[in-house]
Image 1: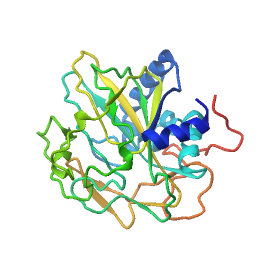
Image 2: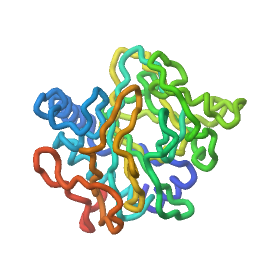
Image 3: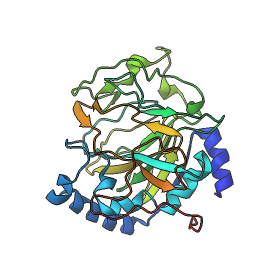
Image 4: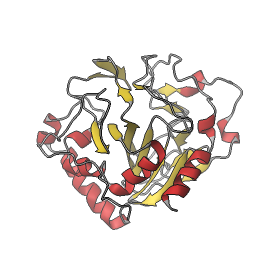
Length: 298
């Protein structure tokens, strides 16, 4: 599928992929190195957020610093939201044997849980162009039996959930929960059943990825296998989007986050707006290198 076809498919579905970034043995070796780095006390001391949630480890783990600027990923994102792109967050998504599936959910501004104010604020709007994207990378196999992602194609065109409605975090919540937040509580039509829609299961080998807008309703299956599933999410916005506007801290998933060390990373193009605090190098002093005009998709 070429880049023009990607844009057409994305407009119809709200997602594209899966695509191959690394072969399975390459990704297995890569993930082994990143896992070792995650356990490095020196790297942990350099984390942006001092809590158990592994947000933004691309800012202190060199392998992840490089991953967010992979041309194979970034070029596809540019076709969908334009040439100038910021990475504003990365996250690990483990599913261990016996873990429940992640409930269906839909967001755009990331007004999740304790705050009705979104974390993302677009200062420009273009019809058909999303204000955010996520690239979900399979660090391990992601099959239906061990918690692969699932999506409802085309659901990005209609709001089924009121993301600004208040939700309370409940650590004990399992089924139909988004890590402790129950999106069923904020369905606009309480009688609407997402399981009756055209559900697609995105099974992937290690090293594959897909790209979607969080407006496309998504979740995951439960892990009924004996092996862990590990996904890594790279979240990006065009440079006209203000990130964490005016916030100095936030609460999410039962944890408190201070934003004094957070910075966005320019992964492609240039930042002509200057709306956000930027991180120009990782915690080891290595500069981030945006994808340039000479980069091509393999």
